Image 1: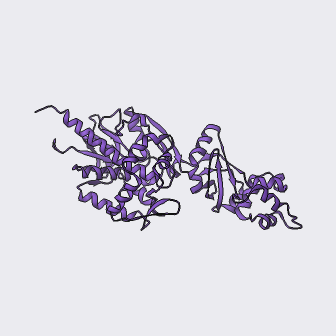
Image 2 (image 1 turned 45 degrees about the vertical axis):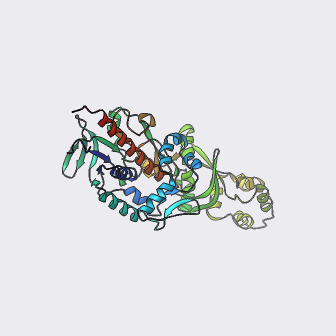
Image 3 (image 1 turned 45 degrees about the horizontal axis):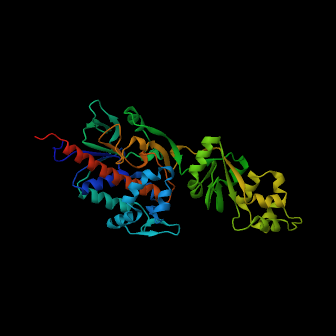
Length: 414
C-alpha cells in the first residue's frame, strides 16, 4: 500500500468538494486517491453548468455569508478562507476567466462547466492524484477498511485518512443518492433527514388551468412568503410552480408547509403600480367589453396572469373593481407540498455540524472527514452552493493535514 512517510488518503466522491480537497492535498505533497461511483467524475457539476456554470457571486462577504441562514456561523470559516474572489482567481489559474452577470452572479466567459473541469482534472493528474471510477462506496468492514462495489467485485481499502464527499440526495441519477446515510448512522453519526431545497412546489390547479397554462412563465411579479419577498420570474407546471424566484423562497415556504401543512405564496402581479392607480384604471367604464378584455385594456393583464386571477380569486372579487385592484397586489397561491428531494436542485439535511469538529472530522470516527452537500446546510442558487462545496473541500483538506500531522507526532519513537 504505502509506507509510513506516505499516508494513504482516500477521497470518496469526485464532485467539487472532493476534487478541491484532492487538489489541496496534492499541492501539500500528498497523493490522494479519488473514488467515484459513476463512470466519469463531477456529473452534477457538469449538468449544473449546461445552462451556464454559476461558479460564485460577487456579493460582499457579510450578505454573502448570510445566505447560509442558520448554518452561517459554521460555513463562515471555510468561505472566509476561500472567498468568492479566491475562487475566481483559482478558475483563472485553470485558464477559465469569469465575468459578473447583471444579477451579481459570476460565470465563466465560456459559460459552460466542461472546459473548467477538463483543465481541473488535467491539473490533478499532473499533481499525481489517482481517480478510480465505478467504485461505489458501501461502508466499512469489521476491520475498518473502506468497502467498494466495483465491476470486478467487492474491494476493500485501508486508509490513513478518509474524506467523504458523496453529495446529498438530489439528482440521484447523477450519483448523489444519499445511500451513505445508513453506513454512517450505523457508526453513530447524527444525520438530519433530507429535505428538498431550491425546489418547486405542488399546487392543486384545476384541470382547466393546467391544460391552458402549463409551461407558461409568470414574469415580473413580486413574490411574498411571510417576511421574505423578491421580484422575479417563475413557471407554471402541471403539478404547481417552479423557477428561480420560487427556488429563492423555497426554504421559508418548505418550513411553513412542515409547520402548518400548507403555505400561501402571495403574488403582486403589478408591482410597478399602486392599488390606488389600479383602482382608478379598473373603475373606468367597460361598456360591453368582457372582463378579460377590460383587464387587458385597463391594466394590461392577460394570459397566464389573468388565468391566475380566475384560478385563485373568488368570483365576487373578480367582478368588484375596487377589491380586484387590491387583489392584483396580493394574489394568494396555496402550496400544498414541496416537490420531492429527487427533483430538487439541492437539499437540506445530512450530517449535523454537531457531529463534526472544527476541521470537518467526524467526532465518532477519528480520521474520517465530510464536506459538501453531505453536511447539513443549505443555500439559495446564485453561486452560494458551489462556493461552499469548494470551500469545504479545502477546509477538510486542511483538517486532514492537521490530523496526519497529529498522528505522526503521536507515533512511538523507533
